[in-house]
Image 1 (cartoon, rainbow, N blue to C red):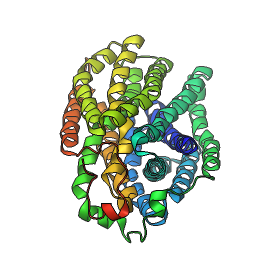
Image 2: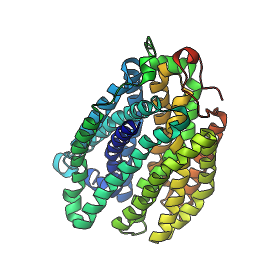
Image 3: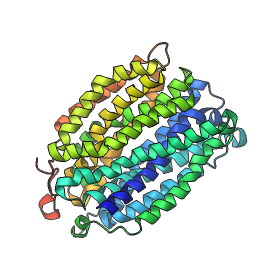
Image 4: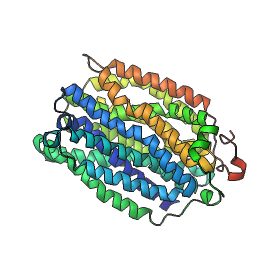
Length: 428
């Protein structure tokens, strides 16, 4: 289990490194370089628009790779998705700016971002299921929290690289070529991840499954449509909070409040590092008390904390901004630490890779793709951006309602193929 969990963590860390480094670049430099004919605000919105394209691609990736995972095994998904995302990320670092090739520059950026999202849409399902279907029932939350730590590690790698370059290079050097270096590093990380995964075995759940479903997506739509929509709505606030802190706040604080780029990156990095360290603890609580109670608590905490977080951000004081971000990240991880165990437990094995991944990534569209754009538009006036806080609070209440309608799946053996046929969820 330790070897499996480590390989899953490494893979998701690398995949999310690729995804997050784009978000940081979009907040800091992509607007002026690829949309120079726009105003500063419009350029940022356009850069966040290409950022959102990756989220739109993720459900499609979960369908494509979910089909592979449900028909041919979880293991092939982990290789194919990592390869696609790594190649697309390296290519982003090679795209010339608008000044060099004109309109082709943002078009190429959009296409490569879409491919990034396509690969990431498959990665989560493959990595989580490979861990969940090997794990003992009473510790499934703990073991599946390892791939959930991956996004934190990926974020720290991505932003730590950007922070180092930002501190070592002049502003002109960073805008000229320095921002490309983190994208080029993705190639080496992808190779390392592929080597780590070569010795992984297929899951016993898949090997025992028998004849696979011919069209997993059709089966999910017929028998699990309500479940997919509820999980998407439930997860939307987690994505929204994470990308508000990690992406929108960088652009807002550096452009509107005049906070130094290095200071902002340090505040966000510190909050995400603590969140990552506490992920296994939250997962253990999920093993002890169930998945749904932690998710409901996380949504409630998010609804309570969004206005204080915005007020603390508006002070432009590093310590206060860090405390605001930390509170938001702790509410976020209360939900997402247990999701990697919760979603697989809701689906039977023959459609588990497709169903869990589609629900997870549709939540990313609702919460992650739109939030930086909506938050940028809502924060145009003077004073603290209370509209952003209201938007996030509303999403938290929506997610709270969706989680309330989902069943509890208290730690138990995953549904066997025979027992799970025709079931929409594990029994409470």
